[in-house]
Image (cartoon, rainbow, N blue to C red; front, top):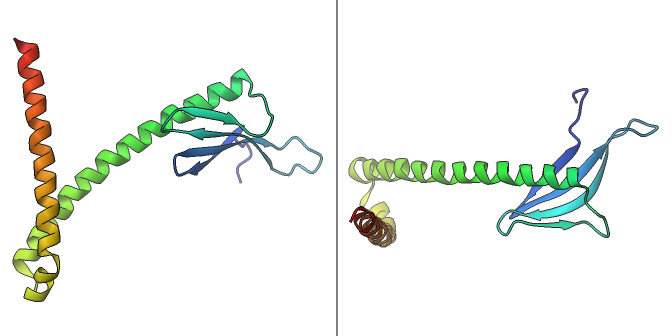
Length: 138
């Protein structure tokens, strides 16, 4: 490990993280990780672990991590959607050039329903945006 460790470690969980304070200032120079909180990205909740009181520095570091984590997750979301577009294109090419009749029979209904559902949502959302845009321009 590098010579200088961060003061905090965030163990990512489903909706946030467990937060640990890192301590190397002990006799054996061992790395000690002391859990100080649990955070929930979705609702912004920060729960001190046990009966701890979080310092202003703890809270500031946790809030900074939460902001940075939200940006990472938002970036991943849009990246996943761009990948989905690529997969749709690859699926189209596969269906046109390589798929057997049995393979197509296996996936056609599920794909058509999913694409119909997606198209319906996208058309409705686009219409909503156009209506909102048209109203603000008036």
